[in-house]
Amino acid sequence: MAGNEDQAKISRKIEENLEYLKERLQLGESNFDVILKEITIGGKKAALLFLDGFTNSQISSFILRAVLNVKREEITPAPLEKLLRQIIPFVEVTPINDLEEAIREALAGPMILFLDGERQALVIDTREYPVRSPEEPDIEKVTRGSRDGFVETLVYNIALIRRRIRDPQLRVEAIKAGQRSVTDVAILYLNDVARPEIVDQVRKRIKSINIDALPMAEKSVEEFIAGSYWNPFPEVRYTERPDVAAAHLVEGHVVIIVDTSPSVMIAPVTFFHHLQHAEEFRHSAIIGTYIRWVRMLGFLLSFLLIPVWILLAEEPRYLPEFLSFIGPKEQAAIPLYLQFIIAHFGLDLVRMASIHTPSPFATALGLVGALLIGQIAVEVGFFVPEVLLYTGLVALGIFATPSWELSMANRVVLLLLILSTGIFGLPGLLGGLAVLVLRIGTTRSFGFPYLWPLIPFNAKALLSIVVRRPIPVSRIRPSFLKVKDVDRMQNKP
Image 1: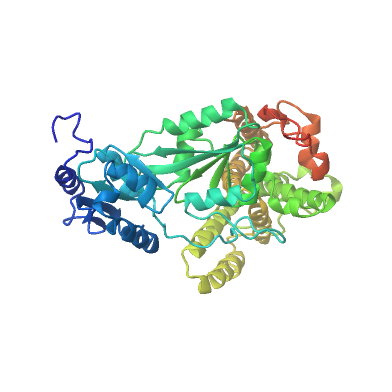
Image 2: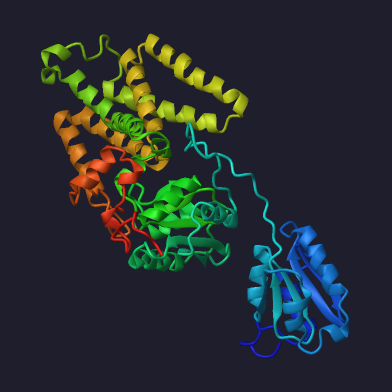
């Protein structure tokens, strides 16, 4: 090919194109799954470039039969144009004129058709990714409700949302990120609802990702676009449920889907978004409110119960008369706060071991860790019995927290509060809580206040967080998003 600037352009001579592809992709040497098949279409040389394993064999065979049976007079003049508009019986066919773009497209799954004498090639999207069925997510199960969940294929996940929002205002923008992985990222939003500044900010941050690959998919993308690397509290909300993603789209949020991941990101969010669960909206308002209160109680227990108990156990003067029974009835050789730290490390160790243990043995492993080891630790004097009791209650609170990311952040907060309370007593507990409030209060999700509606204060919105309001009276979208269409009940054209 002549000239460095034209080196990647498709040449009219198909031999030059094939030579470039063979050299660039090392065909037949290092990439046995990249197939370059030379064929003849209407007496003209042609070639197909595709990946073995990504191509739908039935559709590909149907297209091949159509083009191989073409006669010369049927495609002259303008053979590529006639193949595109008349001969190839398929919808998803687009022309390209760059060899590097053709390589990127082929490595993503579509089939590329080259024709001698043409400076363009055709991208025929016959890909079919390996995909599992949309099953209910393990973390976000509901008692009654839909059982479908996101999968690892981008287009399937978009279809699950499209099924729930059949609005022409739903926009799906595709962006590629990562020089080597060329990962597909999709931004979804309602054009007449979402604030344009939010969409522009999300789009700009994704386009500014500068790294060779994103093999960890959505988590890698989050670390680029969230803006805070060392904040334990999640600045986006993850969900594996299409109904949850659709509900947030209607409110005016932006949904970010990364190919190869069954979790999607919702932005911007507040701290209280992580305390809500789909189960609350699958029951009546009263039952949903009760469920929400129980979850909030579990959330508070997950990081407050043990530090407060340590303080009261070690400094009984803070106890009123009717609570004088609080405190260990026995003494152990290890300081009380270290007992809790050891117990929580042990609990996390059991949890990690159960993840890597074959399913038939996972239950037995949990029983061994929780009962056998814990009971022996009490009998030999390492722990007092109350340590196991309160560790178990905190574990329930952690697993009851709807957001897994928030529950893990609470785990870190809990350990820090145990240390500060055990070492410094009441000043340590109050100082730790002050640092916690300061950290959460200064966190912002894409520039929006993380503690809204507490900071800035909005009594009506705060009431809707404490009480699950019935859907017919929830006509106003969240004010912190500053959406274009505030009223959900007005008649739409």
